[in-house]
Length: 72
Image (cartoon, rainbow, N blue to C red; front, side, top):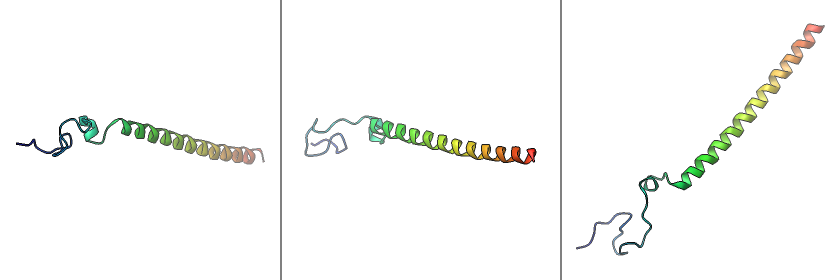
């Protein structure tokens, strides 16, 4: 009688032919996903930093305009 077929024991390949996948890897949460998450977090941090710089520049320009108007 043959074993039941699943990802770690495909029929016709015998045992040990395929790397045993951890539970996380079977759910597509393996080590490669952690790298993707880290990259996404870095991208988000860079985007937030650029947005803050842009808003700071706008606020500085508005403040400079207010100062010029107050001096006149």
